[in-house]
Length: 304
Image (cartoon, rainbow, N blue to C red):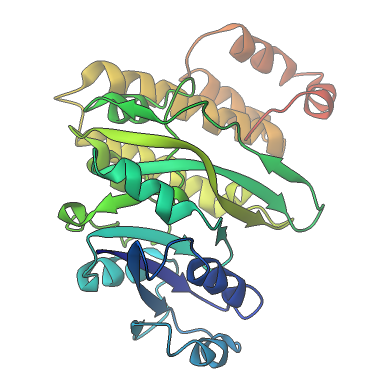
């Protein structure tokens, strides 16, 4: 019987961790088709997270606590990877949940490729808006390097979903660890994971991601770290993939420009637009950065 290690990192998760754990424990086929090794790593929570985890002590096979708060989930994820003993490994954030068929369906595809993902929905807990990503009509298999090259070049069209909460990897890939300097970013982990490897995305919604009104993706410090970190990651691939890295740099600068535009920092927006991929949209953003930006931001999705 296959064993699946599930790595959950927690920090001040008293409001959501029980929901996340229940979604793992209610997986279809658990105990019959496969077993689950539940690994929880707490990053020095200061609320009642530990008390809630204690109630699940019979279900949690391995529990670890970081010696000091690391500022993000990556240190905990790496601890989980080092101690995972399953044939396959999955990740779940403390504020997300899985659909009951997640593991069962991904194990089927996992017989053929070492990396399996799926689609997910997003619920904004502040507005109540629920957005469902489009499912594939059938499981799609990606050739070695197919997903990697698109992720490296920051391509958006026809790209495999790689949201971490939907990812299942074979145990042979557990040596690929997350960066711990910033502690919360996973771009280079995704690149190292998919390089030269085949993968699959199943035709099913397997996870729900919860976000609140304070969207981390719009946070000033997060965006700054993400920008410089992404550019830094590209350096290790430039000699082997010069074309994709050149495209990525332009797209990363375009994303940075749109963020500055959205925030109303027009001098910075223009600076990054000059480094971005030239196009009609970029030209219009540049022109309206002098006048008309409020109208654009009201009627068009500038960033996201």
